[in-house]
Image 1 (cartoon, rainbow, N blue to C red):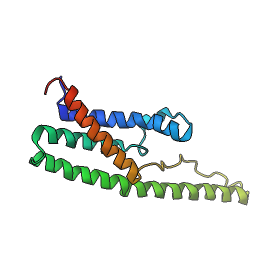
Image 2: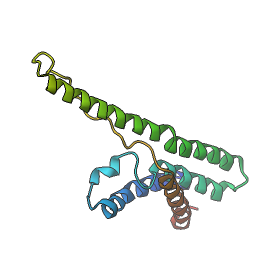
Image 3: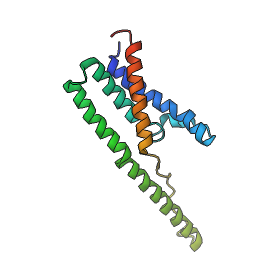
Image 4: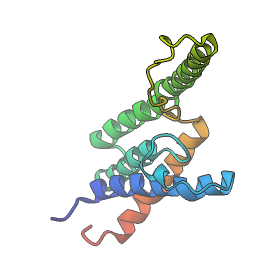
Amino acid sequence: MILSYPILAALLGMLIAQFAKIPIHFLTSGELKWNLMFSTGGMPSSHTAAIISLTTAIGITSGFYSNEFAICVVVSAIVMHDATGVRRHAGYHAEVLNKLLADFNSLIETLKDPNLKKTESREKLKELLGHQPAEVLFGVITGIIVGVLTYYFYPFN
């Protein structure tokens, strides 16, 4: 089975952006975290890279004045708005909830009541859900580059 160029471009955009998070995080923090390959949030935005790679591919194949390209542009705008808006604020909420849970557990320990010590232990909520605008911008740049390069290297065009 041969993947169409737009689908291949979108998948490569996502994979390349996800992989790029590892060396970028290492350069900024000195910490090598391989689990970033399967994580949301971070630099660059893989959702943005995927949708912009797809949009670029559709623009190249169908034309930048086509209905298909127009649809991709609108969906791209929604994805990027979601990444910097709703998902980022959900991450802020997770951060506050994690702090409240830690404070509550500390309060229980302070009270030293054996009946209250049996607090429910939960995993912390994931705080890195959305993106800063710069992370989305670099997702756009990654997506355009991947979309264009995939076109030139895709043998079935």
